[in-house]
Amino acid sequence: MMTSVMGLHDIDVSEFFDVLDSCEGNVYLVTREGDKLNLRSRLSQLLGITRLMEGGRITEAFILCDKPADEQKLFRLNMFGKTEHTA
Image 1: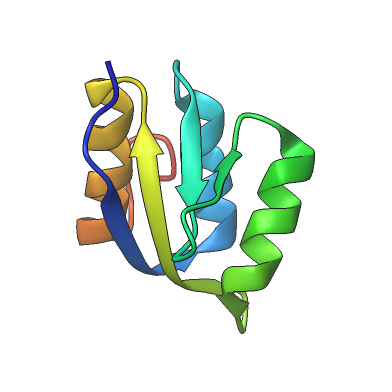
Image 2 (image 1 turned 180 degrees about the vertical axis):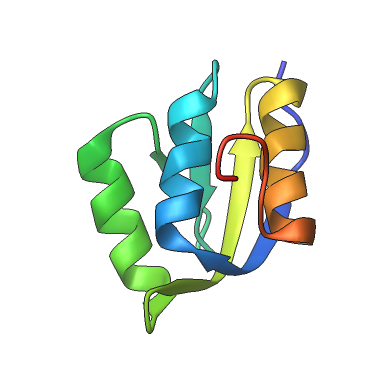
């Protein structure tokens, strides 16, 4: 069961990768055109993230998670900038 699409804004890339590494299900980067990149793949992470970065930060991204727990981790990163995985 997939959760809803979530927008991420002004996220530190290294912290984002740390949270992605802790996710248990698939996490997809969704483009405005509707393309989905599975961010469990390091190659997809690099391809997708480089399109969204400015100055070492992700300026805007849309994320879709298979598992609600993964969505919660990314939501906390989006809201507070740090999680237990990036502290």
